[in-house]
Length: 195
Image (cartoon, rainbow, N blue to C red; front, side, top):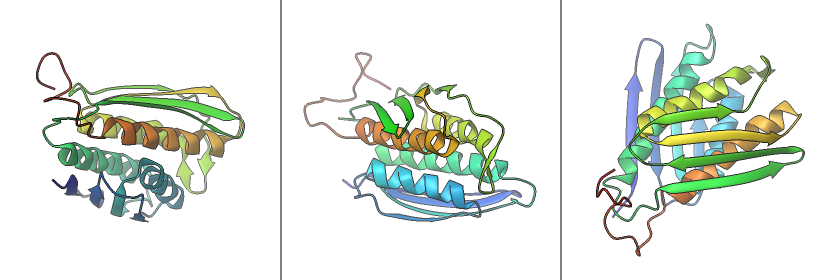
């Protein structure tokens, strides 16, 4: 059974479509008006081994907030739709990854109970045209709409680009692990019988 989704969201601020295949090979075709954000979303596809197509336009003449948050919303909706009834779902995923001096852990649980914890202190700065303070906005929007519990924590790091990029890569690896299907899992992975 294909674990795919296509989700579109159009508001007065943004127009975003996300198409994904959870069982892909890491192919990315990402177009947003924020080059650094596009680069980060490409990391999710590549390191999460999902095929991802993104078309996003937004009011970036104001700032990148709406586009970043709404992309997190739509990606979360698409992942939730693609995982379906959660039968056989591994459910949990985690990764601690380095990038030079930076080290970040991401942990995710597709529990059906959205929660977000961000322990990655970042200064108010820009990477290209993208405001770094939008990283937690993206991840929180994803967690809310994917109905998952998501934690990100910085252990070490000085270079801002390294810290943000390894946060996205660790998230991607945790996402890939949590969304796998394991044939040994009978039903949904919960003693309650529901997620």
